[in-house]
Amino acid sequence: MVSLAEYLKLALDRVSFAKRLGLVPDAWQEDLLRSTSERVLLNCCRQSGKSTMTAVIALHRALYHPGSLILCLAPAPRQSQELFAKIAGFYRDLGRPVSPIGERKLSLELENGSRIMTYRAQRRPSGASAASPS
Ligand SMILES: Nc1ncnc2c1ncn2[C@@H]1O[C@H](COP(=O)(O)OP(=O)(O)OP(=O)(O)O)[C@@H](O)[C@H]1O
Ligand SMILES: [Mg+2]
Image 1 (spheres, helix red, strand yellow):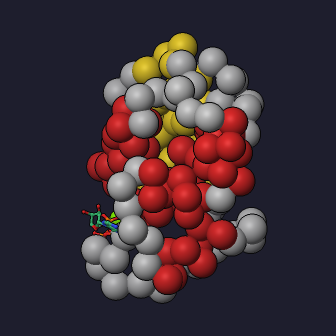
Image 2 (cartoon, rainbow, N blue to C red):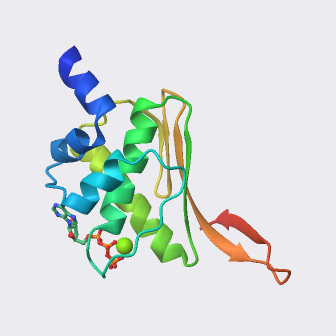
Image 3 (cartoon, protein in one colour):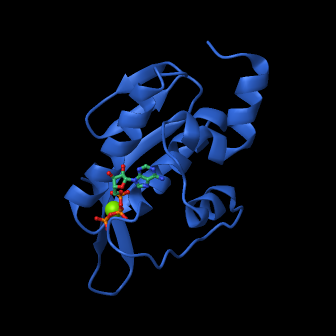
């Protein structure tokens, strides 16, 4: 149970939310967490924390924006599954602050109506993309 002040701080500031998860965001990670852009392109080296920050943003959305649908998409199933595993791990680390109504290996449904699903993005011969469950 968190106080109202703490709840509001976590809900309104994704950097505080990341710190609550035990992370110490780098400057570029803080910029990303505070970004309100609809699309973001990350030009970063390997193992710099792209997936970790994406997982923080996805979980924050699910917890504090009821009814959100969050899709983890990647060309290979393993990639989207790894991202989902990070999100699910953070969710458990926080003690499941919004109760689950469906907690499965590749999807998470919360009682606030938010859902996080894992999909493999497929490229059709025409070039149009589609998504199917991993
Ligand atoms: N701000 C941070 N504080 C603590 N640990 C961090 C932070 N950012 C990333 N890490 C750790 O760095 C490691 C690499 O993170 P992550 O897997 O997110 O990187 P990535 O850029 O997605 O890697 P890849 O290029 O392999 O996909 C992980 O162990 C993660 O926990
Ligand atoms: Mg990654």
